[in-house]
Amino acid sequence: MSEIEYVIKRNGIKVPFTPQRITNAIYRAAVAVGGRDKETAEQLTKQVVAYLEEHFSSQNPPTVEDVQDAVEKMLIENSHSKVAKAYILYRDERARMRSGRKEQTIQPSQNIPWAKIWQVLDWASSRDLHTIERYNQRIRAGEAGDIIRDSEIFYEEDIKIAARMILDRKDKVKVVLITGPSSSGKTTTTIKLGSILKQNNINLITLNVDHYFFDLDDHPKDEFGDYDYETPQALDLNLISEHLVSLIAGEEVYIPFYNFKTGKRLLNHTPMKLKENEVILIDSLHGLYPALTQGVEDEQKFKLFLEPLLQMKDEDDKYIRWTDIRLMRRMLRDSAFRSLDPESTLTHWHYVRSSELRNIIPNINRADYIINSAMPYELSIYKPKLLPYFEKWSKQFKGDALREDALERSQRILKLLQKIEAIDNDSIVPNDSVIREFIGGSSLNYH
Image 1 (cartoon, rainbow, N blue to C red):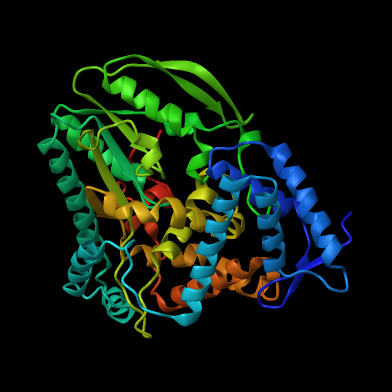
Image 2: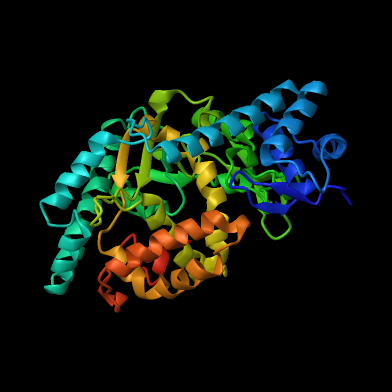
């Protein structure tokens, strides 16, 4: 039991001091640079706690910055320079994010596909779908069917363009990488793209990178003790790259098998070898993460990025956030297909988002093509399904220092859903729509 009971957060609120969070943070930094030694992380934590107890007390608790300073100090003093650098860089990144929110400065982001954004905005403006007010007017006028038709056609055209680009390079492309942040619609897009390519005598053969997870015991955890499946370092990146090179060379490899029930990986399990006219498909959050395909020549890869790039403003002239759309999508999918309640999805989302900003979003402009998976009408479909939850959470998490992120998102999305006209009957959604990936009832085979 530590003599220190509390830590003071940046907003002045006291929260319980939990040494396990220090261990998790150190281990995550170690994993980021290729290390997987939990015992060392635990020993370093003991040194951090001892240092804090020497300099602070229950009457004079440390701040979050004091704890982080102590972690850096112990890492450096114990000659863990690479881990210390990873920890410092992550800490600096978080500080810059907080500073950016406070200053409200407007700087062109390198993580936004501006050309694609303008295309989507032009499409939305020409159909009166660029503001919530105009959208609601069309819904109230009975034009939901027209909105759905036009939205689905726009998405399908994007997929056809991607397919044509692959076919134009069919003599060189050996790997198709379909990526994007959580709940961006990768599965539906993969099926539709694969169907077009098959009609042109190209078969996509999936390399399921989920089987390349390290054993669960070797995964890093977040500050709440949840295992981190979101980071690319949870995958055996070297083995994936090695297998890709071998497959492209016409060799047979043995894919590992990961058992999600036991959290264990079995190596050399499933044989795989490419046949004529077969191209490797990787549908993964981390498809564009450089280390995943480090051994494959760039011209042999076709890189496709997905994001629901909705361009719709509220009355305050603020655009609806893409991450909020994906959060609602994931809530519905997790509830329908993964036996996870929506609150669990919400309270885990800060973690998902943090990993996206570090490892996924920065790669968007490395893509050969970007597909917009947003459907303006999907917000109306989600409203009757999710509004009561956000009403509850906006009250439930008030005053909870550990759930500030969940509260902020809940209040923002509640305000959004309250403004959107609802569509109570989701039978209006086409059976092969990307939205069916999240609400169920798809005519596509996702297995």
